[in-house]
Length: 183
Image (cartoon, rainbow, N blue to C red; front, top):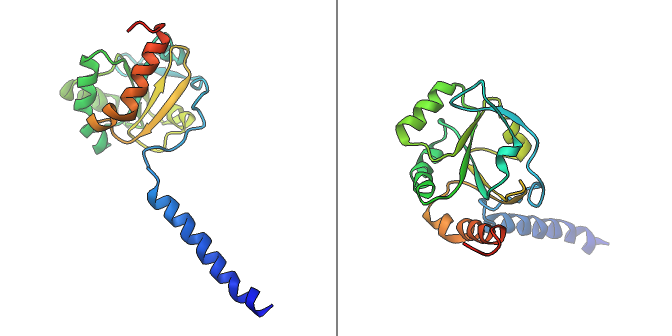
């Protein structure tokens, strides 16, 4: 009995160390998403440039697209922005989801200054749609197929390393599959 009582703290310590080591060696940019394999959530949001124009989830169908969650207050978003402009120039379809910016004008000015890589930009002032996507913060990028099904979620900036690695490979493979193998 005495050995069992002494072993309990040791067992608790080993379990705790196991959880800490698992967290230490996990990749924080690969957070799982409950949406992977499911349709994008339903929404209606205004266009960032034309607030009277409303868009729904259908804007995320018809082509393989990256949905990039960004904000002017996000320094990492600024860091990734030049690379997003480059991807857009190469023909990668990107739709922006402006997340919790307090001023539409500030967001539009930011895009006018840094360039606008987005085919379309949605204004999510309260962050409710981003919350429906399971967004923790900005930037986050979702890979969505032609039917509006989420295939992948990347947390953090999209840069050359990320693009030439998993995200770009997944994007190109999905484009090829959904175009019937002709790319």
